[in-house]
Length: 421
Image 1 (tube, rainbow, N blue to C red):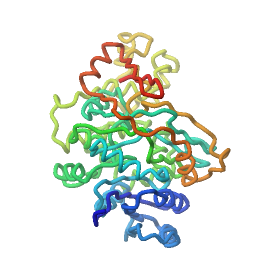
Image 2: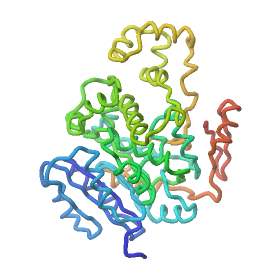
Image 3: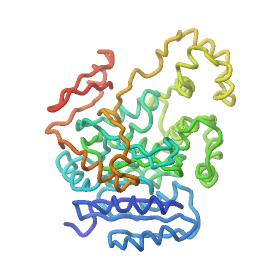
Image 4: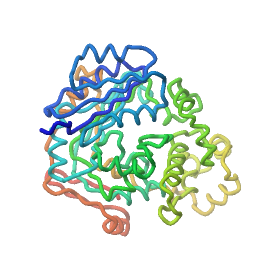
């Protein structure tokens, strides 16, 4: 093994020592030894430091911030400390599947992959914003997938894919050379972005030709009562203290003004739009580089079954478009043009990120009540591993798939998967 670690696992934390404990336990429980853990403690108290001290592992490099940083700055700091060939960023309520780093190392070596993301595992802590009861959603079938990055990025800008299909630093493994490319363009990794996961995905997709989706999960997306990202997905105006602090410390409202972006109630869509405008500005892109579908953006803020059928139409307009520069008359004309069916809405349920089937189980049936136990359970659910030949998604077969009504039948050795590209 080389002197420098192969993997750097960055875990920025703030006031969540109760979940951090289990997050770190999952990261340390590995069948691969050449890694480090960067903990950047942005907490008000010393509880996180106590957790790190009690775990007492030489793999953990602990840093205590002298003053409270915006979330993006805390991640920026953590990544700056990383010495590994590959960097993985997770939150303090997330985790790594146990014994998954050895698998990831072999995957990278086999496919010479500089950017890897994995099929989704989501663990909802009890009392989370998504579900009051604990749940675990894991993939039931898998396929190694090679994706041409700019094709996905264009679909995000066209509002056909959501941002989480991008090759993000969050929940993914990114080679240090890709990180250096980003820094060479804008001087930092996240560039004070309103959303570090969305923004990093856009940067990586623009600069790196392709990325791989592994057939076996290595990260676990945790959702807890204090999850900032999850709260921004909630369709309401009453955000919790974590999200309010995120907006205040990150000066998000000033970013909306700077980039002339309308802030709507459904914040995740507004932040997606803001991240896109930041990316275009920082990378000095031209209009022809990426086609932005602004009309579809505003339409997608609502449930199409509600707005397109004109049920509660006036209420929906007042609720979500009050601050937008799109008039009700424009919306009426659009509805007449589109008809009642949501034909503009993406006919893409199984998209890049969800190539594989998923199943939700009750983790309490397996005596699982934290992300570390969930990481053990995920490992027990593991089936076959890497395919010999990855499925390739490039612009050519994306076009062919579109001509076949966007339906592409993919056969893998053990299972038939239906995906839509």
